[in-house]
Image 1 (spheres, one colour):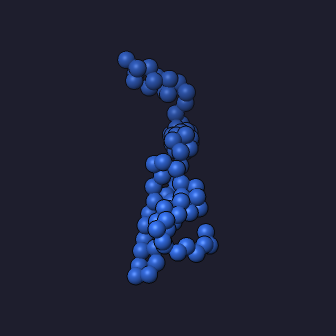
Image 2 (tube, helix red, strand yellow; image 1 turned 90 degrees about the vertical axis):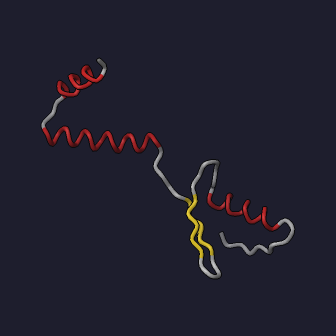
Image 3 (cartoon, helix red, strand yellow; image 1 turned 180 degrees about the horizontal axis):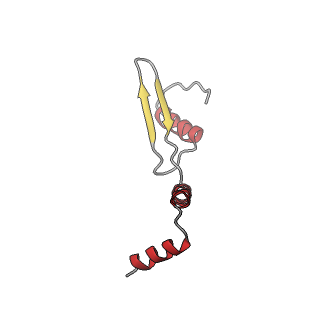
Length: 84
């Protein structure tokens, strides 16, 4: 965002709107603010979605099972045990 804004009576809300548009912010997004004497850095925190995190975890579990030599029968038995 390369824009010069002059703060006036409406400046506060215009500044916030420019930031929201520039970072594509939506409700519940998280921001990291870092400031110095004459600057402010605003960074949107990017977290993977729940489905992306689940896929990543599933892949790690699958790799570990293969490494340990565990097959589908072990998984099925564990599921039956957990559902009791």
